[in-house]
Amino acid sequence: MRPVRTLAAALAESTVVLDGGLSGQLEAQGCDLSDALWSARLLADDPQQIVAAHMAYVRAGAQVLITASYQATFEGFARRGAGRDEAAGLLARSVRLAREAAGTADSDVWVAASVGPYGAMLADGSEYRGRYGLSVRELERFHRPRIEALAAAGPDVLALETVPDTDEAEALLRAAEGCGTPVWLSYSIAGERTRAGQPLDGAFAYAADLDQVVAVGVNCCATGDVDRAVELASSVAGKPVVVYPNSGEQWDAERRRWRGRSTFRAARVRGWEQAGAALVGGCCRVGPEEIAELARLRTPSRRP
Image (cartoon, rainbow, N blue to C red; front, side):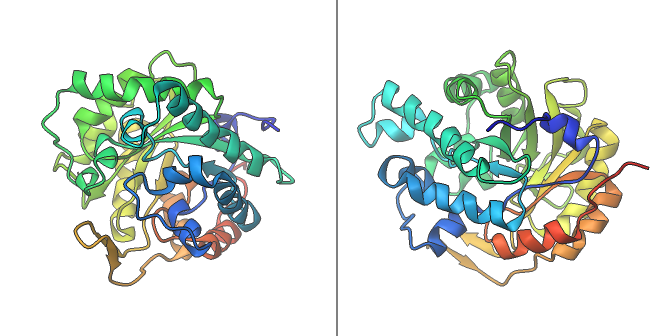
């Protein structure tokens, strides 16, 4: 069932809770994600595992489910022998699976179709660096077909997420223009800069005058970098702010494993809200338990 309200309308009234890391929940369910397609492999091989992972977040109180399409691309599926039609069908399936899980909730749950960066397709950690040596036009040509396929499946919003630099942000926004679906734009950052090293105030400004963009912010970053990023996004873009950091552990792309310990604390949501965040959740290694606590602590209404 589609939500009664639009996500933009909901953001004007209350803080909306995102889900957490989909891959972490899938691994907790016993799924092997060692493939280059990561969680997107399960769109073809075991889609009900994806539904189960989404439902774990619905039970935790998530109001937005992000689809298993972050690493899903026509190029990636082609390497596994899938033609264009089959790949488009798998992208659409990611939206249907999230919608199936959302339909089990007692209240509105929105579906955000994940559009990961070009580097996610490479599966070598380069989405944390950006600067792939491609022009904005080349990146736009890469992103447009899957954005069109995802938008055609009817999500409530496109999550242009984990964007490492402003060139890719520009390309993504161009590719999404005219697709008929709202978007949010979320950067991966280090300190007050994008992963590629550009100042965040300039990065957030890309979305300031675009009506299609319903929120702007950061994800897949350290929790310690969030507070200042939220302040900058709110003041520069003049839009609701989306924020969903990692657990604080670090991904070792060479050894394909996480290092360090979790520093994610749901209690920080109050500070994020005060700085302007309206859409809050977690990314890698943040699971249903943390999302449940975040949902309990967030401010349910911003109405006076």
